[in-house]
Every structure is written in structure tokens, then in C-alpha cells.
Length: 240
Picture (tube, rainbow, N blue to C red):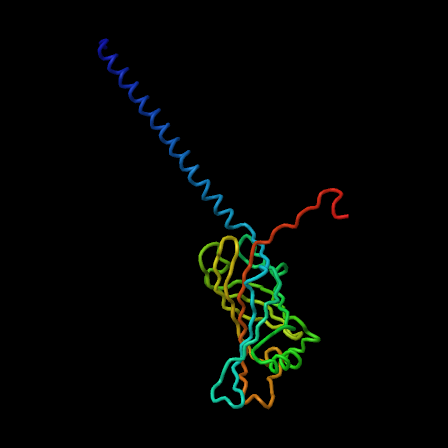
């Protein structure tokens, strides 16, 4: 074989080797870039899947009852509405977005329920709710259902909340329609449910000024949950 043929063959082999090496380098670069690109996504997914603990904020919470009634001397029905802002509670959502029942509870103080009629308030608290013996109502969330199926981490979400409600010593399962929105780390929104007086063994009001009272009670709850902060650990020698 001639010297010219050997030289040509050598150049061809060198070109192939160079192309192969460049291909390996390009593949490695793309793989490294893909790894770096997916790393933040994995971190974001991990953060979104982390358990979330909330407590009720100091403001932005109000519970209301609403009952349709007709008063003597009035031609039209109107809503009797009683409100309270004395509410405490916490909510724990696990890494799968499910509510943790044993760590979630909302307590509403009933002794300061207020409407536009002092006489109504006295009757509701003394006779209907018997607040001297049962000063609070308790809601224990058990499950998120439908819609997004959990509290939103951004934007607005609608879903149902299954929860055990205790009123005047009687506990019944209830279904709440919830609209919630994420506001920074907080979650705000409104939840509503309805049931009858009989469901909780409550007596419908029967007083002379009332011509009629609907059998359905609607509960409305405006809520604002904020992230729970860990309690501060006292330094050695402090707090004694």
C-alpha cells in the first residue's frame, strides 16, 4: 500500500475519533444540563409535598348561624343571623395533602353569639344551645373530598370538607362546601354547611314574637389559617 494511502487512512481515523469524542462530550453536557434543570423541579415538588401545620390567625375568623324566620308584624321572612369571632384551632395536612384528624380541631365559643335582637340571643343561648352547660361547639376535620382535594398552595381551590361537628353534646358528621385561597403562607376562605334542628336534637324556637322558624340551620365560617411556628426553646437558665 502506498504512503499516500496510509496517510489518508490515518486522517480518516483521526477525524472519526475526534467526532466520536465530541459526541460524547455533547451528550455529557446535555445530561448535566438536564440534571441541573430537573433539580429545582424536584425541590419544588418535595416542598409542595411537605406536611403543613396551620393555626387560626388572631383575626379574619368569624362563625355565623343563619335561620329563616318571620317575626310578628312583618310581612316578609328574614334571616336571623348570629355571629362570633371567638374561635381557636389548628389544622394539620400530611405530605399527601390529607387532613390529619388527631391533630386538627376548631373550637367555637358560643357564649358571645350576637345577632340584631338581644331577646333572640338570650333565647338561643339559654334554651336552644344551653351554653351554661355547653359553652363551645367543636369541629374535627376528617377528610378533604372532591375538587382539588386539599388546601391550595397557590391560587384558589374548591372542595368539600368532611368533619365531625359537636353541638350541645351531640356529634354528627357534616359536609362543608369550601372555597379557599392561598395568600403567601396563609390560607383564607369560606366554608358552609346546613342541617336541621332535629339532627342535633335541638328544639326549634317557639316564642310569641315568632310566626315561623325554618327547620334548616345554615352555618358559615370565614377562616384564616397561618403557618404554625415552632415554640421558642429557652436558653439554659431561662424560664426558671
